[in-house]
Length: 367
Image 1: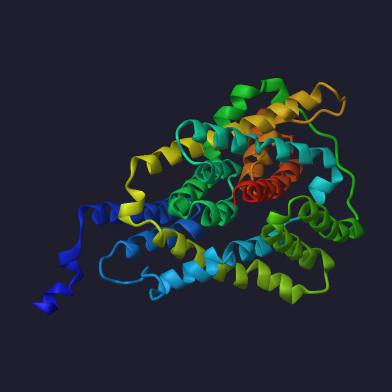
Image 2: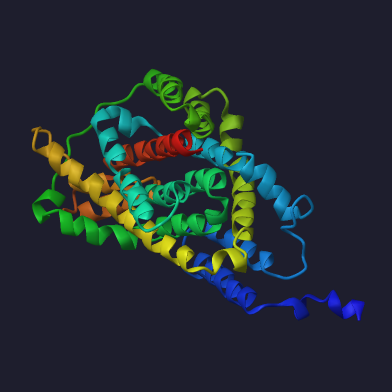
């Protein structure tokens, strides 16, 4: 009978049930474990509703969530809005006070490029490899921005991997940091940084936008919005815009981004062996990025008397501010009077810029 044919209960497949479990797991991790709840909660719900049959939510040109995905993600609107909010939250003072710390943020992109070549070796296309590699930057919006253009079929898997590893920073990074540093190195106390003037903070977002976009034009959507948000913050004359970018606008963009990304994870797209392998490669990318930052700090110490605590090199990944907090916590465990948080924020915020530049390079070469 036509009535029963329109009941979703008769259209459920085993794959859909598996995806329900995945969606509910993400919701559980967000609520009970507080793993990146702002993103994993809407992503988990998006996974759930996208795998309920006959809803039409992801039907091209008709579905509600499809429209949000098409106009928000495919048209490159929502990720740059997230970057606008991030910029409004970011203080570049720690990085500007010690410019050498920018190299640590750059070094932490090593995992992106190592995994790019590794993924190719395992049979992924160039576009898929770039999308998987960018997970190493631990920057969810950048991962989504790149995946939407180079490998839309991997968008959901790569986004979940990126945000999962961001949430697991306190678990993944410490063993790597301990392995690569000595007790004495973890006790290094860094010299107090100079005070950065308000003029420097206002000039930096403008100058950085000009330089970076001239060198890597494809990074403009992310870099321009990131620096605009920071200019709002540092100008001190547009408090309303700063507040909107930091809160209301970013919250709205986060809701739409999470739900649409989750909704791309239908059973037929997600339940494949290569998707599971993406999580393995993503973890490797994140681990290599962490190691590269630590190792460069150790290398720099060979050529300077003003020593860098190698722990802050691990903060070069883009997980702001969690990676910086992990570096600070480990330093305090070695020496209770050692305060590394502000130093670690230098490579942490430069890592955000580095990952956006890496995405721009991939788009230039492969887009």
